[in-house]
Length: 234
Image 1: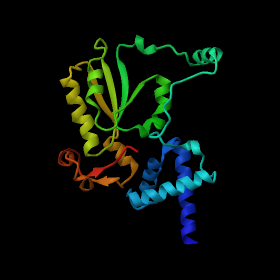
Image 2 (image 1 turned 90 degrees about the vertical axis):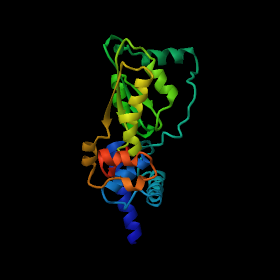
Image 3 (image 1 turned 60 degrees about the vertical axis):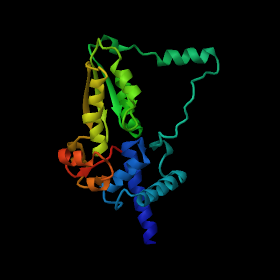
Image 4 (image 1 turned 180 degrees about the vertical axis):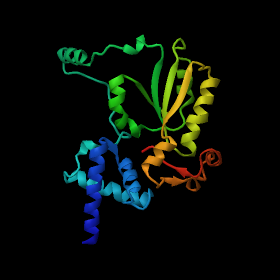
């Protein structure tokens, strides 16, 4: 009975988390539970328990399926229509004037990982802002292409990533250094999340201690500049 009650309490907490944040990833739910002291760690074993309960809650109809997203397995397919009339209706509905062409500067949001897309989408859509998922350290091709893009208008990159050795190194050193090396003098980068003040608001429990990331070659650099505590974007 004790185990069953704990599962019910966990599912109730998951429901409240998912309802408030929808859409959210399963790992995002895990981080919320961890910050509330409802799971002891973000280890594989503890997260497997979270994923299992989350699956059961959705299969039983307790948590709506659409509240949880998995953007690593979405179907990618060319857009098609049933007939020309359907295409014309879709085009009329989706038409939107490009107001950015009248602006003196451009803006893009870059993210270390795609799991944050669902949270950002309403704002990105409202302001028609471009979004790039870098999947960790961005490819040389992508960063070079951006650096060689229209240099008549300054480009402001708002960066979102983990507050950990690799995450901070990407935005504070690697991307800036490569943009400069590739001639992107019209490009300016600014990290907007995670900032240390964001992490402090998440609670006193960090996702990791830098000691747990010792295999990361950027760990000594991170410890020197940012301390011992790490949080992940999810």
